[in-house]
Image 1 (cartoon, rainbow, N blue to C red):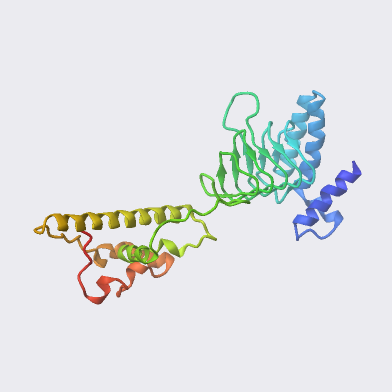
Image 2 (cartoon, rainbow, N blue to C red; image 1 turned 90 degrees about the horizontal axis):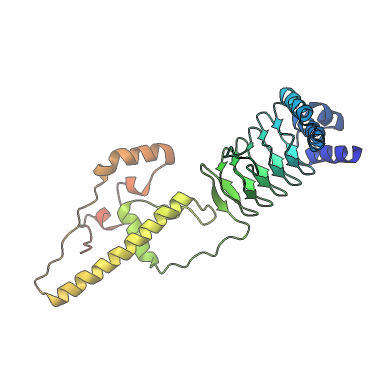
Length: 288
């Protein structure tokens, strides 16, 4: 018993640089108080003294602001930092060396009995305000960003952010797909549309930027295919004439670009001089 208590206190020192001494941690850390009271309540729950276990759990919530159902299974060296507003449901399972911050919910999405709360494997870190909802597993070593809402299984070592939660980093990232795209043509498309989706590096895999990048690569492929079709038509019919695409003018996008400049800095489309055809006074290139 005393060995487990010392282990819990040492885990606070390991993960909270504000902790100064043994007495301060023992008397002033509500996460530690909630954990110790939960262990007693869980023991009562397993002995089928469920009313007494729930009463002790309610007292713990009143004392610490942390609600842990006595049926929840908590591993060793569990640490709740600050703790106010943390809610852990009845069928939740928490592994060893897990860290939760304030406002975290390990909740369910069903009113049916049985497993309805998440399982957190060893070493998981859950940021402030995050909600993990449903009977799935968050893999060992995963990190859940602050205020994320996670409703699907998370692989080991992954980092999840956003609403709904999206994986932005894996322990073993997928191999990058090699695209057969001419870099010069890709740059020309970027300049034409005045948007630099490629300013986001592979080290910052923003899902939205990746989607825009895929769209621009698709536009590049379509543009190239149309040019080949027009070239074939000119060979078949000497009277065939190329048409000109409507010019993209800065004034058509002035309001949007000014808003983007205000929050994100100057954009490629807001410059008065472009690197492409329109910046040197020549008419836009025809795409067929």
